[in-house]
Structure formats: structure tokens, C-alpha cells
Length: 217
Image 1: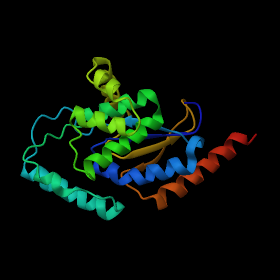
Image 2: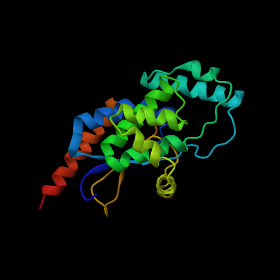
Image 3: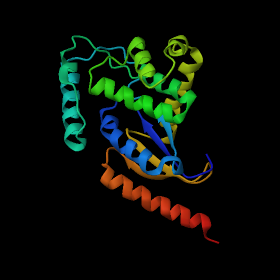
Image 4: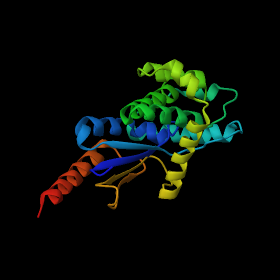
């Protein structure tokens, strides 16, 4: 992408990314097409097969409390009443990658919808049926989703996102970087949660400097 843009590394089942969701909404509203966002799915816990135990649930509850305090985002704690839950983030990531095939905007909408379904509504977003319904809720084609979701090419495309995250050196989510072109260096906007009161002014300053450099002799 040979123009100013952002690259957002996130996972649909990352609680801090759910906390960061209002910031991404604010960026999209403020900058729109001036500063498009490229979404890369990070793969928080892809392929997990072990059910969560009591210690894992306690740790997650603590994370949720921290995210709520920092961001104000709501959580449905009935999740912790589930007798068995396998925290495999790959299906949710794959669903967002499928949406991205249509457009980056649809992918960002899908990411937000999966976040909300999982954290605020206690929906099981490891389920293909649930993900298909979420896709339909953002005006996606549910029948197409069900037909393609298990396609090996889509699975490989999702794994490629995980590989990109690893090769880029991203060690946590959310991570947001800004760049001006394919061959230019990227600037770190944030690695971890920051509120809109910090992110938006920083991006505005970066955008203005980038624009000034583009027109200077």
C-alpha cells in the first residue's frame, strides 16, 4: 500500500483488543479513507485443544477486570459458568480473514462484531454456526460463509496472518503501526492498550507531518 496507512494486529478473542475497539472505531470515523487500516490477525491461541481450568478462568477474569477499568468496555461474566471451554482463537480469526476477502472494512466490522458477541453477549465464537450468524449480522452471505469456512486455502491464508505477526516481531495485541508506503519504515503507534485521548492526537500529529513532508521540495 503506497500511501499513508495503519496496520492493526489484533485477535477477535483478545480482551485488550475488545478494550481497544472504541479506539479503532474513532480512528475510522476521524480519518476514514485518508488513513486506511490494514488488519492482520494475530493468532492469540490458535489450535488450543486443552479445556480451560480454574486457574485459567481466574486469570482471565482478572484480565477482564483490568480491561473494563481501563476502557469501560462491558463483559458478560456468565462466561465463567461454562463447564467446558476450549480457548481456540483460530476459528474466530479465520472468520475475520474470510470477511477481509470482501473488503478491509467488512473485516474490521466482523472483528468488532465477534468481539461484542464473545465479550458482551457470552456467545461461543469458536463455533462455526455462531460465526456464520455473526457474519450474516454484518450483511455477509451466511450460506457462502458456511460453504467456504473449512476450505484449506482459507485456513492457510489465516495461518499466513499468524506468520506475518510472528515475523514482524509483534508480541502482544493490540499493536498498531503507521507507515507511508511499502518501502518506508513504520512507526509504532501503540503496543498494548491506549485510550483515544492519546491515540487520536498522536495520529493527527503523524498525519500532518507526513502530509507536510509529502509536499515539501
